[in-house]
Image (cartoon, rainbow, N blue to C red; front, side, top):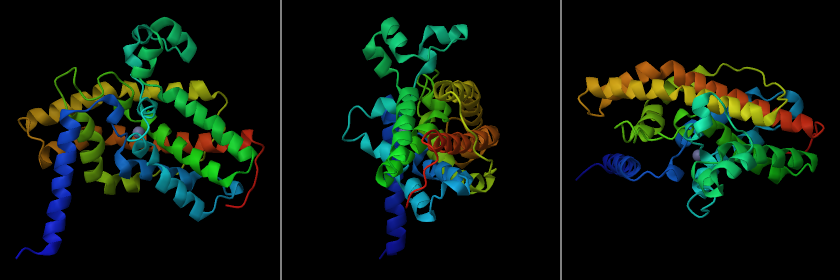
Length: 289
Ligand SMILES: [Zn+2]
């Protein structure tokens, strides 16, 4: 008889294989998952450590924000409007190739139509709206809403720092690299999480003056990593003859380690800075949590 522990491991492995295959074969942009659950929770945990003591967030409250930072991905199943909030194909817009970013959603709608703007993703505006909702929740000292919007903000900010959430070639489908999305953000991140966990650089959050430019700046920054990531995937799969085995992930990590650790730490700092700024904008309220 097989050892039950072995069966559980096999079951988990099988589930992972089916899930990865699902991501590889049919991956509409609304079903891509940011950093995977573990990555999202790690970014949130890094950010919680950075919040200043004067905000008086209890450890329990911080743990709840970390746990709920994956909720927006789960929400996609029941809420069809949720998917486009997790990405923006910023290089879809022709102004981008001229070195310009149109930050106004209304202007983009005028130029491209509402359907296109939704289809190409509304991550920056979903992030901005969540920021203002959080600020109002702070003003009302509404603990449940502060938890909800801090967790949502944690999610959207982290997605905005994942390069493949900021490009039209989000799954390598335009460069014959299908499946790179899950290979990078789930399989590679899961394999090397133990290294990333030790990489927290514990910076101090700062006050953000202009929320829209801040959000668009990090999204453009994420987009600038796309080519590096895709070339790392090409390098690794060429060396392993297209086999996505242990060696492939070692090589992908070798080429993207610096970029990944930088993105994760910068996501954490952006998040702690936005939560801190929403709190300052609300008049620095202290409430039971
Ligand atoms: Zn997401």
